[in-house]
Amino acid sequence: MPDRIPRLLCSALLALAAGCTTVGPAADGPAVGRELDAGGLRAAALADADLGAGYTVVLMSPGQDTAPDQERETADVPACQPVLDAVAPRKAASGPSAEADLSVTRAGDPDGAVYAGLLAFGPGRAERLQDELEQVLAHCSGFTSAAGGGAAPGRAVTTRHRLTRADTPTPEGADAVTAFTLTNESGAVTLSQRALLARVGTALAVFSTVGTGREPAAEPDPEVVRAQLAKLRAAQRG
Image 1 (spheres, rainbow, N blue to C red):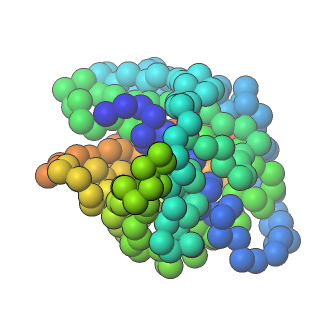
Image 2 (cartoon, rainbow, N blue to C red; image 1 turned 30 degrees about the horizontal axis):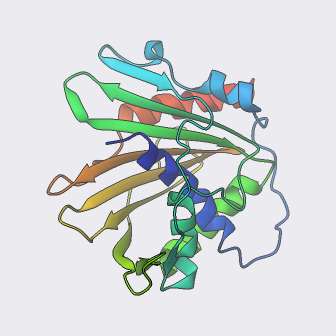
Image 3 (cartoon, rainbow, N blue to C red; image 1 turned 30 degrees about the vertical axis):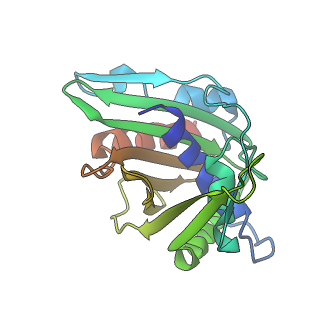
């Protein structure tokens, strides 16, 4: 499965919230750790040595998931449009102050790859984004998208999507967690993408996996999640 799919899912979490903000700016709570810049986030990303034997970590370069332009898909439920605007090759309307992306694979488990995005924000912003994401998940359980026929109007391609919240305990090192599965139910093969978003101080860490057909997207490797959250928290404490 191409790296680009789950990495764009990380960006979808931001666009979901940015596209569904219904409350004004909230007063920032007490600062929890320092805000990391791009260099700090990359230093806080996992390396092979942070995990046990058999794990391989690849730190991705900015823009590595960029794809050529294509027609914009439109959701039949307006509240769900930010999902499509994120997973299509478009720039999100809002984003973090810094970002680092990585992939983690484990020998003997080729289908268990975990893709992670570390996203830094100003004080209070990460918490507000997570709260807004919860609102989106409550109102966007299923929708259909359509891509225009371009030079052949009337031949639009429609796709059915399902967005399902996943109950998961808050992992060690996280202040709060939100998890969900996004499923593409059209076509001969079902594609599922599972994401776990953990808030750590002023940052969000997004972990995602991909599944196809009868092999649904697995829960992100708990060892990878635990190790990354611990390293991110330590970096914020300086």
